[in-house]
Length: 320
Image (cartoon, rainbow, N blue to C red):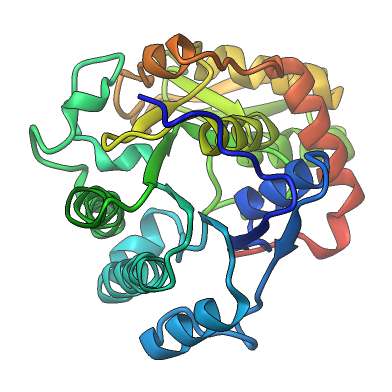
């Protein structure tokens, strides 16, 4: 459903979480958009956990549109270690910004969720209607519940007040600004780092967990940013919308592609004592395609871009 095209030209656009992988990609994409004024805040400038501070900042700065990409994120270990922080901080960040946007009559807000909001055993590809139809994955349920709260808050404010607040649910992301910690990172940055270090060490092989048969979907963060700008301008509806590449790949094939991009010519070895995880996870991106948007960055081109960024930032990689 559309209320007509929402123009960002000449608007004050607040990108929360602008230092993160997603937020920085949104800023890059907005800079191509034309005469929009991009607003950003650091944690020292504005504590998003403090409701009155957030409300006062929005009232004073008067953003016309908000991309809500700020979040406390982390891997399985972090989620298990800090469940209270994950559910509290992510719930408060979303609630404070959404409510502040309502009070100041912000024209439009886009809340960014995560594919972990869906049930662990959701049918594949995962449709938007799968939300709240079954138990969550226990390892990241605290983060997922906070994200579900955020998107339902957008829906509730839309229903009660008529606020033009929308939500997007992205698939697995990678690209510039990713986390390359070997234990806490996601699969693509972990594989890039493994392959690079194996190449530098002139190793004979590189190891991956399990059989490599599990299928996963990946999207370059610049594609996501382009899709989010498209949604901000063209979509106005209550239900959240999936945003993904619409293609999946086996972990084995992904590892081989990463090795090709990195230039590591050793052997790929499987540690079959380790689990494969869920056999397949892919988002159903039919609705966004029907509304006129598709990604444009191929996986190989995206991996080349990500590896280039990794090499350029080896000395100060995010290790968390």
